[in-house]
Length: 85
Image (tube, rainbow, N blue to C red; front, side):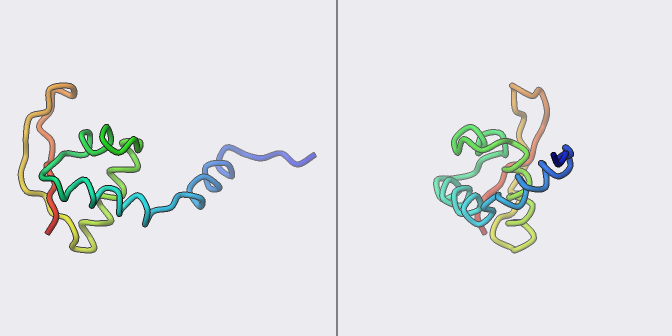
């Protein structure tokens, strides 16, 4: 019987992630205004880690930009707000 490591399982999950579909979902929500990563995660149902990764990819592609910083009560931190370019 083959032993599967945690790293292998994470890799399989990573490979199955449909990044384009997640990016399109985030862009669809950003059509409605400016949001932070936490708000986008709540609205889309995606994990916050996935949202942050897709926002970074979209920012590098020039499709979104950081439009400011806002205090977000649940995290008690100032966090970036994103908008479509």
